[in-house]
Image 1 (cartoon, each protein chain N blue to C red):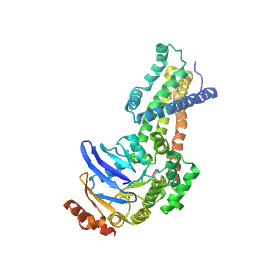
Image 2 (image 1 turned 135 degrees about the horizontal axis):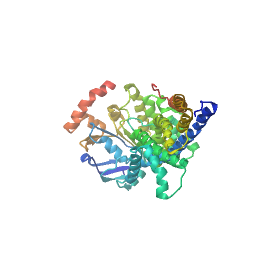
Image 3 (image 1 turned 135 degrees about the vertical axis):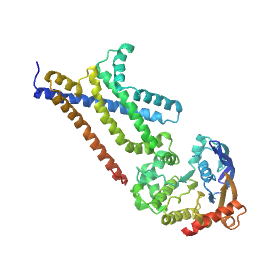
Image 4 (image 1 turned 180 degrees about the vertical axis):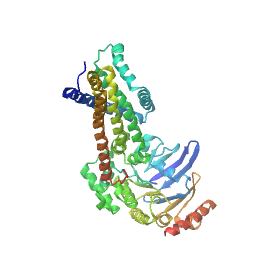
Length: 223
Length: 249
């Protein structure tokens, strides 16, 4: 027996937005921290550290996030005999996944800063870490805003994959409500619209941020 | 005793020799202009002096202390020198004040207050104290280059290196930068300049060095090198470059 799409069903979907949002935030925060480490290792003056970072990036960029999710979910149970809930598994998997992509984005941003900027800093008696901190990273951050936000938008949408291991986020909530209402052409467009509402403001904020930074530095760009 | 002595400095890039056993002595207060065609090794020589390039062989003696060609020693040598680049290389995300104080606070460990005073003093030297809050991209090329000079001077180097610092400037902006150089020279700063600015080399340099194929080909006071070149290489170089400079004059 099917039900109509009433206020309760609508609220169920709406409330699941918070899990999508929370998972995205965890993945971005965790991935941001690990990703920064990956990016820094990637430009380290010591070659084995760079190889380590390259290996990590290749592994996580070259395999589907769904496989990473399965391996994390079942792997922790099988290999380490750890009983993990869906939350832990998806948080971990998406953190590792984000770290690879953010690490590579930020590595590119760091390397986009011209070599003479490093040299100018070195000539002011700044060591490697201080060159990076005071001169390179602030400039790299400005460059990295568009691709970072672009990835954040991708990530929010990718978290729908977590529905496959039974994690009830926005997409899973939509599936569940479709199952009870048999109204996929109402439920799924609604779910899609909610994803859009999560992602769109990010792009707007990103553009605002870029404009504000450019204006304060006297940079004129055609957007 | 010379302030700086280079002994047999050699450097190759990918098997291609750029500097070939270059030896050179510079006295305290001397102004040395290095001229030569592109690819003659003049910029590389300058960059070897402050260790931005690590020479393959040779030693550098600065104020009686010998520095080997390794990164650690060259880093210490770099503290004694200031360098200004062709493309200014100011930090675009920092205002003029912070561009100058960064090396003082983060590099030398001075306080913000002391650093700011030094920044103001060095900006006065280049006549830009009113631009202290501006960002580099809000300034003209000539102003940016003067800030870059102020930034290097603020570190109180005992030797200043200039790597074709007027080469990227519009002709009408060269004069303001040359004026700063002339003032520094008359204040007794020891300076080494790689330059195409023959007017300055002629008027303010004590010694002109003509580099060719990674070697010091000719060396002497400007009137001798410009008026009585001994080698055909220098003669043809001067002939080639002079009409350009007459145009600027």
